[in-house]
Length: 112
Image 1 (spheres, rainbow, N blue to C red):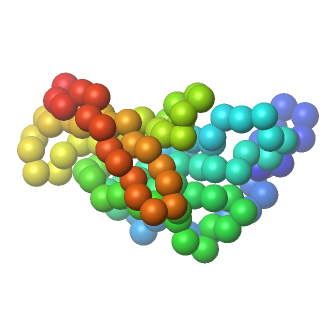
Image 2 (image 1 turned 135 degrees about the vertical axis):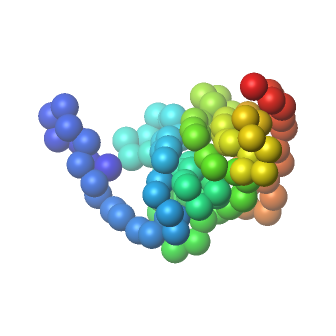
Image 3 (image 1 turned 180 degrees about the horizontal axis):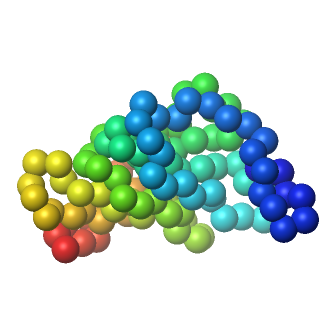
């Protein structure tokens, strides 16, 4: 993203999901340009991206209909909330660690 005054402008775009992107969160840090991003979409995936190479996500996890993603400050993890497509009214909230070789999910709220 480019910052001009009080506006954020697109700097780079790519095909991140096969459906609409519902939620985006940049990794908080001290860099002038954030390096990592987590996205969630209607295609039931949430994905972790290295913004220096957006050809392939660092990790992608299929869950349900993603309703929100957010980086957790001070962790290499994000919170992800999604609705289970098979159980009506069943919402999952996870803390998901990111890494190059594996992603571990830890349930926070099993059902709302």
